[in-house]
Length: 101
Figure 1: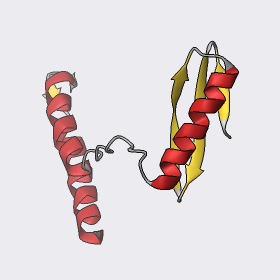
Figure 2: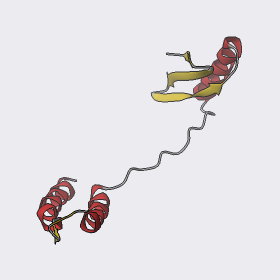
Figure 3: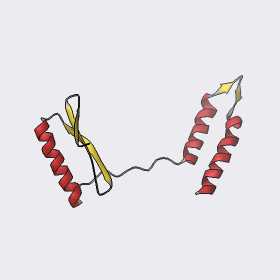
Figure 4: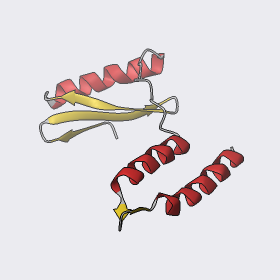
């Protein structure tokens, strides 16, 4: 796929050197969009196209701790916390994930 239109904006999507490049060109004519695409492809081929740094996703263990804190404060049945019911499976799965890495 090279360029495509969504609503009034043009977008580009192509691959070069095994990397995928995609972005919004904006509300321009199709001719201008093709020119921008040609410029982006040339930059990618020459190695001058800089993609934004990818932010690493959160670790499972961090999310599990955060979820347990949320669960303890918001989920209660009959005045009794259910966190102990889910703490054991989360502990067990986080250990197996850490052990397999």
